[in-house]
Length: 403
Image (cartoon, rainbow, N blue to C red; front, side, top):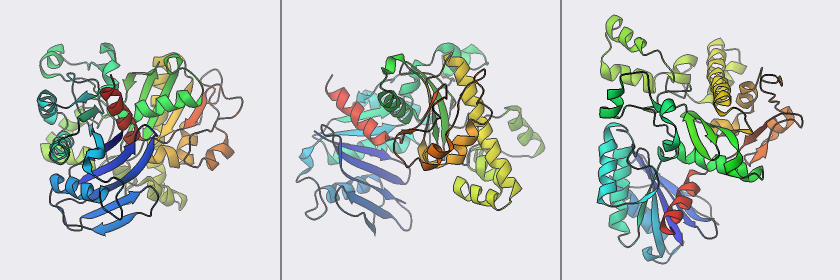
């Protein structure tokens, strides 16, 4: 079966077409800057170079139409007709407590996605537009929603509740939801396979480190705690997000700096994190590391704060799990920064504390493929596992259709 995976954002639509029975990517790409100047298409057929060009696309519906035209194009296409697409899998960020598994999309599912707009205002609305566009372009194909929050539905109540009046959870569902669930599920599953262990018999800490960052404690293949919370703002220091914060700071910003709701929202979500700490005008860790190597003390301080928070969560989740078989790094930073991986375990070498030993040669030579980077006498495995959220969505879509 050929499964099209769609990830629709506010100004982009990412897509990958799989032959899922062979786990083969037939075509992949993105339409970006939708509705803005310089709208572009990147399209790559598996055996050809990437095609890049400017396009005229005003909305998600038109973007999906453009993608469809390229998939059936005589020169660049990989299918003869849209009816060869057997299903469409959609990444949806928030399903709340009502949807905790991948599901075939119907009116009730779309209603839940809509109800969660207030919990994920930047993500769920464009996710729904992507679904509606694909329903129009592929009316024959079942549409399946795979939710980022679903993997974390197994977190126990004592871990997802906040220390606020319980009625705010009962009536308003204010709780820890967690995000990046598709990635955490994929890399924990692949880590167990790599270690030749049953997933149900493993205790793994997964670190998804990119512009957005989160850490998850995975016990027997189930999430039991994760660093992101009611929104993706909580937890680690990220590219532009502050991460964990004393909530009284918000009151201080309101009272003494006269910032309003929108200004505080922008400050914490788009002006903080590595961007705000390093003060070099970039949230890209590569730029910040370069500045640090050239003697910039603010950049160095930002990197140390970033890594310290990662280490603290690894230690916390080791306590939550009771023991650890492996720590997994994934995401743009997790897969590509040997320094971050090294610093995250600095001071954890003692067997009495953790016994995690990074092999500097293995760490430096890790090349984007799944691999181990610990020494032979490390008490735990330290793995680099490239994430593949599109494949995980395709897998879950296939699973739903065959159960």
